[in-house]
Image (cartoon, rainbow over all chains, first blue to last red; front, top):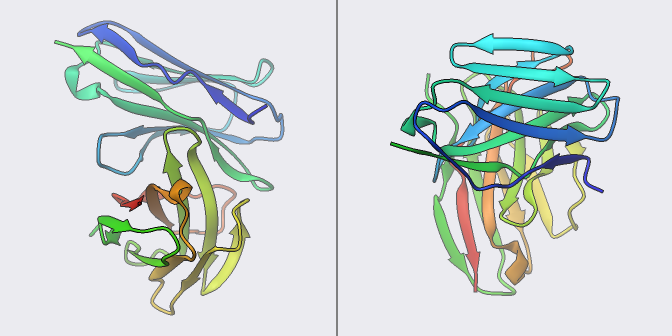
Length: 110
Length: 115
């Protein structure tokens, strides 16, 4: 079993829709939870990170962590074609360092 | 501030050859990490260097090695290339200010194809 599981997609939604991306993890020792966005032919860029359970909002993006269920989510409101990319969740602990999910390919249809 | 740069961007090699990839971190960043990204395995951690010393290592064979220079620039080497080494190799730098978590900034990667 992988330490971080992420549905690879692809996921295709119409412009303006709310997108929900999800990951599960297995080790309760993970302390930080991140979402990265990777455009084609580019390296990943950090979108958001959070330390505790709950929600963190940044513009159209909301990251949600439920430590009791070991479940992390990223919501994108009012999705735009420019949001089309691969989204990677990641978890971090001082012991195991950073572990990435396999990534979900997202396409927003105009 | 310039971002992380990696050279070359694309590389084609044949089985059995060796390859060296280069990474220049963001100015002032002392930590450099290397990752391998493939469609099947996703993004996997290779190793991390800090102040010219390998600080962490992932689960890759000894054919994968790296080093860091005094100016924080880093190189990774893969010897005796195999077809399965075809991947995007990403370098990430971090300021490593001493906290538990330090944001990593990724370069565009080097696309290695092994024939």
